[in-house]
Structures are given as structure tokens and as C-alpha cells.
Amino acid sequence: MSEEARGASRADTKLHYLDNNATTRPAPEVVEAMMPFFTEKWGNASSMYEFGGQVHRDMEEARAKVAALLKCDPGEIVFTSCGSESDNQAIFGTVEALGPSTVVITTKVEHPAVIQPCKALEERGHRVIWVGVHGDGTLDEAQYAAALATPGPKLVTMMWANNETGVLFPIAECARLAKAAGAVFHTDATQAVGKVAGVDMAATPADMLSFSGHKIHAPKGIGVLFIRRGTPVRPFLLGGHQEKSRRAGTENVPYIVGLGKACELAAAELRDGTLDRIAALRDRLEAGLLRIPETVVNGNREMRLANTLNISFPYIEGEAMLFHLADAGICASSGSACTSGSLDPSHVLKAMDVPFTSLHGSLRFSLSRYSTDADVDAVLEAMPGIVRTLRDLSPFGR
Image 1: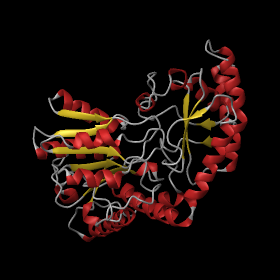
Image 2: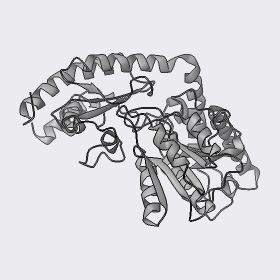
Image 3: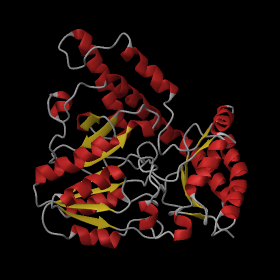
Image 4: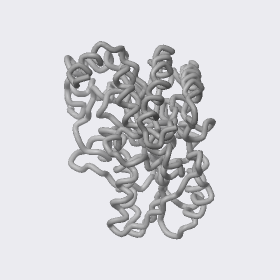
């Protein structure tokens, strides 16, 4: 089939979107909440006159909704452009505040938004300790405890939920151990906020938390950094008094308002059983795919997000499977959206010692409130034939 014919065929195919850990559909309620701020409420929230003052009040109302989801004080919320900026602010800002002898403790399975800043610090002469994981993706807590025993000022930066496998780290306990060791503790909670009931900053002694709006049905281009009062961290962006001088730049009010609405919706979902419905869909998808011979789930199947399934189909390439799935209108992923352009195998699965025969043949399916039985049915109908075809072509095929 020519590429032109393939494109036309895809245009007529119903979309089955199962890549929600990469990005989510903006909720209609979010879009509706944002629209007035592109039309009649377009004033600058930092202006002194009433036209800007009303916009400022709307922005602060959104800040309160974000704080309600995280169970923290609104004054501890800093709006950023994305989760990556929030991670960079937390890491570089803390190291600058603590000094050049700061030891950074992180894990081998972090998102690139944490890994790359940590590698940059290593190149500048800072000591970075990379904590490993077990074969099921759970944290090696013995290695973590040993790292915390390192003398001197310390920053821990550790994800709450893995973006590829959905595996959860025991963040509340890790934060308590870090505080006992005198360390500053930051968690990248981009995949956890709105999906894990335990994201509670009143009960979790983390100093900082990052997340991004587009993972919870807000638009792309808005993020959050929670900074607990008294945390030593320097501003990352300078040049203005916005965000109480913690992040310069004119506030992106439409997106902030949209994020506030998304957080309000996410808080409701944590109460109304939506996550149970999503988990049931994920489990049905998993059970169906495991009927394909030699298929294996990557990661702990209990301590993971309700919406995430990472699964390997040995002897074939994930990219080839994605190509065939796309022909069926199915959107999935072979790993993090920030690294999917690379042909290198997942650093997360490598850290878990996933066998070579499965390493390249992994797919991630991630669901949302908009996922349906029809989406799961489409995958279960398409995958057996795709795997059979690709294994017949593979030199490693059975």
C-alpha cells in the first residue's frame, strides 16, 4: 500500500487512543472554562487596575483548586510552563541554594526531565547517586537507604509513578527517610497526580512536587511546582515579580484557569470510582493480550497506576507493532513520549533487566476517563494477527 493510500485509509479509521501517559485529550469542561480568557477576560493578571484585578482573582481561584487536589496551601503552588520546567527548577534551584557540595540522589528509571539535569550536574562535578530497581520495577530500598547515609547536603529527586510501567514508588516513606537524613526531597508526580489517591502533601513530607497539566486533561503548556514553605530553592527564571518572585514571566491565565478546572475534575474522579472503571478496562486488556503466546507484563502488577499496562511481545520490534496498530487507528507507545524518536531500548526496562528478546518488543497502553470497551476490543482484535505476522518475519521468531 502506498503512503498516500495508507494515509487515506487511516483517515477513515476510528481513533482508539491508548497513549494517555504521553498526553490526554483536553476535557470539554476545561476548554469551556478557558475560552473567556481568550476573549473578554484577556487582561494582565499582574496589572493594578480592575480589568487585570478580576483576572488575577480568577487565577487565584484556579490556584486554590490545584492546592485542593494536592491538599496543600495555595501559596505553595508555583505555575510553570510544564512538568519538565518544574523538574529543572526543583533540581537546579535546590543545588544552587544548598551549594556545590550537594549530593543528588535519584533513580535509574526517572523521566528524561530528571535524568538530563542530573547528568548535567555530574558533568559540572557534582556527585549523583543512581539508585536501582528490582526486576519488577520497584525501588531498591536498600540502595536508597545506603545513598541517604552519604554525608553532606543532599537532594533526593524521585518519581512517584513511572511513566513507562506505571510502577509506584513508596514516596511518603521515601520522603520521611530523606527528611530524617537531612535531605531535601523532590518528587516528579507527573503521572501520579489525579491518578493516585495518596498524592496528599499534608500527609507526605516531600519538600517539592512537579506535575504537568496535559496529563490530566488540561492543555499542553502549563505545569506546577509545589514548594513547601521554607524549602531552600532558588528561582529558575528571573526578570519579574510574578509567582511571588519564584518564577518570572507574565502569567498564562487561560491555561492556569484550565488547569484549575482539570484539577477540580480529577479530584471528583478520585472520589467517584472512575479509577476503578479504568483499572477494570486495563485488566481486561491485559488478560486478553496475555493469551498471545510468550507475552509478559513488565513491572509490578499490584503497585502500579490503574491506567497503565506495559507488556512485551518477544522476538519482534515495538516500532513495527506501533506501525501496524496505527493502521487500525490505535494509538499506543513503545515508551516515554520524550524518547520515542530514539531506536535505543527503554532505559527503564534495561534497569529492570528485561531480557533482550523482550526489550525491543514492549508496548505501553495507557487509558483515561475517555477510554471505552470499544478501545480495548480494537486492540484485542488487532494484536494477535500483528504479532503472528511480525514473528513470521523475525529471525528470532518461533
